[in-house]
Length: 197
Image 1 (cartoon, rainbow, N blue to C red):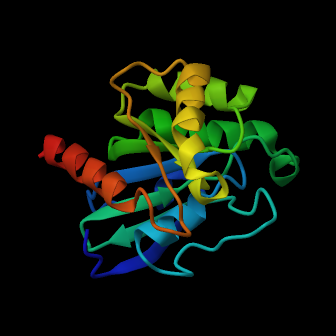
Image 2 (cartoon, helix red, strand yellow):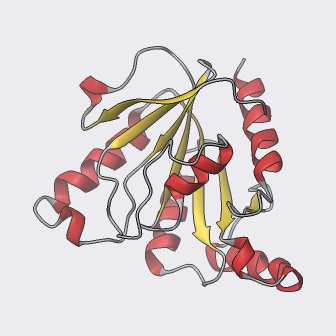
């Protein structure tokens, strides 16, 4: 996909701040530090569109990135990191779950899992809950460049098995370093958006 324009437009902390443009929303979810912001930068071929950090829990708002004035890529706070939300853990949980449960403009949920490791309990819980929302859902295995090419199929197969993914749920391999998986993920996004028209 050719990226003509990409910009961060809103960092929302509540429904009253969500955009009302009507653009479909492609939502990135995953554990803290799994690479959600890096994936957005890679998809848009921008180095610093979404702020990245080695420190888990850095994203604490719902960040909207307008792409070609047609859609939003949405970066959610990561789950599984206690320190970032220690002051108000219940509110943070409700904030994100209410967005995912009630936001009508969500077109696709992209669930990121680190390919190097088996899914953790919170990954499994999140996957089960997200699939129950009946919103188009896809798994993206990140950090593919950290694994030898010959072992990649076994790693993605292990993720499918651990998460008990139905056959119809896609599971892609992605590397922000090499760009592997970028075109395939954009193709999937376009097909989902075409189905909404």
